[in-house]
Length: 322
Image (cartoon, rainbow, N blue to C red; front, side):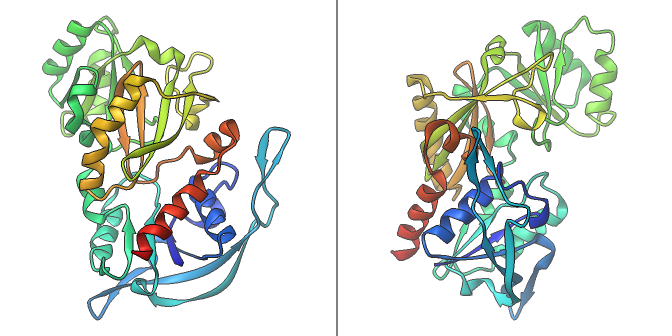
């Protein structure tokens, strides 16, 4: 297969952590061509989606002292040129959030790829429709009590009822901008004003789950089914478990409740063309559905002695071969 990965600048990726690099390494190991491009390198020519594509050769990470390590020059650009994306067997949209106007325009370009010739993962339409906070509300039956509002009165009433809550910007990523709320906080009104940009943008507010101290579980779903999970535990005074803010990772297994959540979420993901997804679960409640560039592969591989990248690429090969 010829696989194109739409990524952030490759020089800025962390090969020991990045799930995209794990998938690219797996594709190379399985004998497939690996090409990369960036959002700003996409174009529409003669009604088709094109990109300035660079073929890359990777030096895989190795396990050393319990950590993934890479050489300084871990990739090499072999060739480069402007090519129609339909020359590829699959295109994987792996640009990190936030979802900006440029990101949205990229999804419109990707809509011009003929699905009979080239599979785009995740679906451009699915990416537009699945805001990683709002989309979660499609599965409210397995969520903690949650509201979305920009009204200070509505938010205060909810927090007073729940005693403690967590505020999340709708366009945030990696734990950015998530705040702990208590009605007695003397800064409460200011927090809401700043977070809603003076009442101009809604935010999500969820009942605080005390179980968060035991971890925020990231579950990776492929084609709607779980293939691995990692628990991210807050450290120090931090209440967030995100790895980007220092959360400690630990080995975990799925509970019956978490399997049930996957069964609730999976069919809708497949329906929306969201094939590679990371869901977050705290205390048996679904808190987020991550569809843009979910991570966790490296950590799961390390803790569970797996190779999720191979699982993803082998699945992709089966789908593209049909």
